[in-house]
Length: 207
Image (cartoon, rainbow, N blue to C red; front, side, top):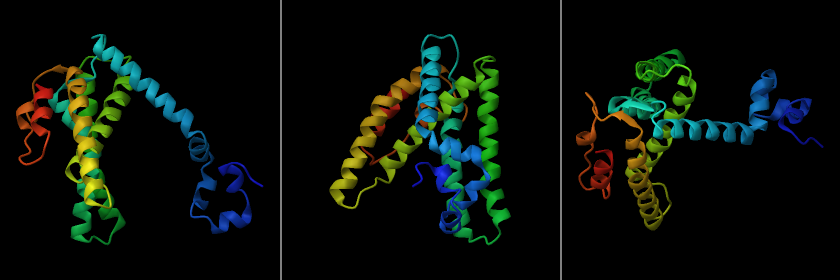
């Protein structure tokens, strides 16, 4: 009996039936999947180091509020563009890739630019991983606040409450890692959400 994914994907019968059969040609990807816990702990360690360096002012996590917004956008942009692809009903895979990929690459380029001008050099990879990791979870929490998961009304209410609480606690932490409290395209005053409970506290957390 096979114990690992690599063994599973080398069994001829399993390879023919498995939707993951194509991974048999990419042993490095299989290795990453099998060791996902190690990869995750490594990423968390890098993020922790980045946050510590940011809090101690030995490096810069977010150059300004625009940099922070761009980090959110790296994950929000492809989701938004997939909605565009869905409504346009494009039949070309290349067209879909262009619609989703080009804006995402542009936003990511903005993150790289902001990270570079912040003055980090040696710690650039660390700060890049840290800010994107924080951006991912922030966007995930915002998504839960706006469109909470749950099969029942109480479940959705609970998901929204948890997301709101997370944002209220997490936003001041994010704001403390912003070097320059300015932003041409995004700042604390940009945060508005009438009728959404907790948004005013989130806005105060950014100030």
